[in-house]
Amino acid sequence: MNVLRFSDLCAQGKVSGQRVFIRADLNVPQDDAGHITEDTRIRASVPCIQMALDAGAAVMVTSHLGRPTEGEFKPEDSLAPVAQRLSELLHRDVPLVSQWVDGVQVQPGQLVLLENCRVNPGEKKNNEALARKMAALCDIFVNDAFGTAHRAEGTTYGIAQFAPIACAGPLLAAEIDAITRALAAPKRPLAAIVAGSKVSTKLTILKSLASKVDQLIVGGGIANTFMLAAGLKIGKSLAEVDLVDEARAVMAAMKARGADVPIPTDVVVAERFAADATAQVKRADQVGDDDLILDIGPETAARLAAQLQQAGTIVWNGPVGVFEFDAFAQGTQAIAKAIAASDAFSIAGGGDTLAAIAKYGIEKQVGYISTGGGAFLEILEGKTLPAFQILSERAAQSA
Image 1 (spheres, one colour):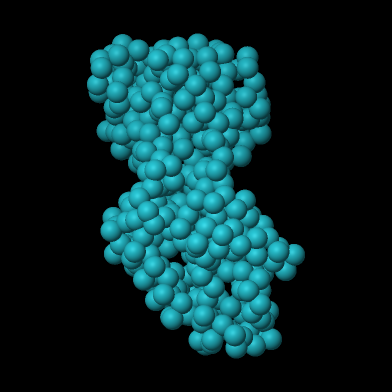
Image 2: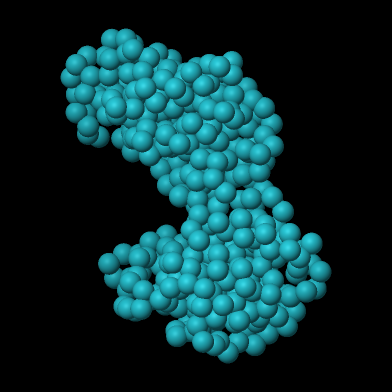
């Protein structure tokens, strides 16, 4: 995908003295007192901001935070805690500006944080008048918010239509590069792990991947539905009986390409869903009526780990068991360790996946960790994200 890159504009000396508007993803979790509890997204946004300052730009940054009501600003919607954290990370004062749509005073070398963009009426529905006003604030628009790249909103799409220059920041560019490497031009075999509680939420992903990948590993509640499709009993386990035919269709699509969807040969079961429940390993064809399948068994985990060792590219979305409970975490741990030990290029995304990566300390062994949950899933579905589309169109216009 061809897009203009902010790093290239900086290297070419085209940023000095320019008004730069950065759409970042600073939507961080907070406690009831408004204190930031996890600041990964803020820290991840610093390189783009610093790049703009180092290049001599007048820098404006904005983001959404939470789910505010348009036109009704409340104290809990404020980016004030983010401004404070940015000040600490950048070792400089970061003024917070409200009511900014009609004009912002910022000079080259200065940085301001623009208050929660989703408070502005028309942001969510990408109102053209709002988009044009925001575009008039800048000479260069930089989208560095992959987490919102699947939404066509005012600060993710509209402003990119009308700004004099629209480009991708380093975070967004890195996502594009990693996704291209993993899906558009992968080193084969290409293995995908798609796990989670429901087939219905990831059915389109499974169908899309079935036409692309060489190995499609399913886990969690999704695997239970595929076990039903393979004629196995799953006791009281979570599954979607009405989607068994859809699961069979995915299996058939893989088989037609000379591949398959590995069905567990052993599983870890319990009689109740609890951290202190007694775990028992059973053959997949011996699951009892009162059993809950909460993880893949050691034989299955070893077989899947061996497959991953042979992969050239690995895409990972979702743990294969209830890894939050230690008794049912071995399957996910085995998958995580196999990915970490593999020579394959790996890309991982989704909140639970990131939690598993953190739990097993393999951050440095994963090729790329995607920062966007919903956007990452839509990429796996084969969709073109609106933010990517408009940046690509603008690059083509300027070529």
